[in-house]
Length: 369
Ligand SMILES: C[S@@+](CC[C@H](N)C(=O)[O-])C[C@H]1O[C@@H](n2cnc3c(N)ncnc32)[C@H](O)[C@@H]1O
Image (tube, rainbow, N blue to C red; front, side, top):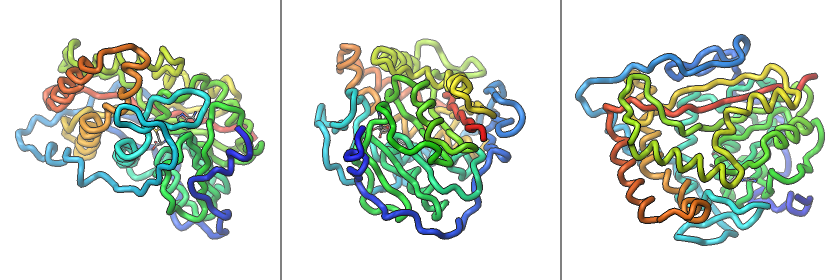
């Protein structure tokens, strides 16, 4: 990773305007309640997903009305300047390793849809780590469409925000205090020591081979007292009431994902190890907060129902992206079989009688002063 690369911005800013934040910071003292999750922030260092979500057995179809994606999708401008085209998808041309998540149109739509879901999960917050009220420097790892970085830059206009990604797919119009950089975060980082108040990484799917190294590099670049927060799903579908048969196709899709990611050395199960990696690297006050994402609008609770509708839309319209390159390339799988499996899974996942959910991990920790 060189300084020349570092300045290969998709868009850039001339630096942070020195104004006071107009919106209040988020904080872990008031964690989101996704039905069952509790106890983040001060207090227990691990929450679990033991509590059961109450199902909606009513016959009205409001939940499914809510599952139509279009009203939720945010359209975002993109400027795809480089990439490799394969099977109708575009892939990043930059980086040490071949990538398996496409970039461009459909993937940017998926990023936008996911961002809406994640924000709803946190009841409007962008993160849970209890960072300082007026951060000066924030880094977003694997920023993708830049949608989180844009929101955080607007939330903290006095902070300089950097969003870094392998792919130059970020919008050319962004807040003035946000700069996008094209770089590989698996390489040596050249950001300064003690530079950032907050380093954030969300849904770095099949992206990171060496998480311990990444969290150590983040430790070096964080200011004393600064926080790192990682978040991501573990597509190990479950149900608390026996309504998920073991032979459904979307359980098989989860297994394929774990298999693919493990074969390239970027295991999808690593989210479960993040807490330990942070502790081993020297972070303190490490918190793991796990929430359940319902796989369709089966819950009774309105907010969970809506989150389930987003998850359903994501599965139905976006999940194929995750398998587009890797299924054949990594596993040598038959693309026809994958299409059949996907079609079956898309049908199954709409069944509101299956009360399944997927765990989503938030892990954060502080570099000691
Ligand atoms: C699933 S997207 C998530 C985007 C964003 N974090 C979000 O939550 O909206 C993962 C992103 O990580 C990027 N990525 C993968 N490997 C990377 C690497 N080694 N260095 C930088 N970015 C990487 C991909 O290009 C992709 O944009």
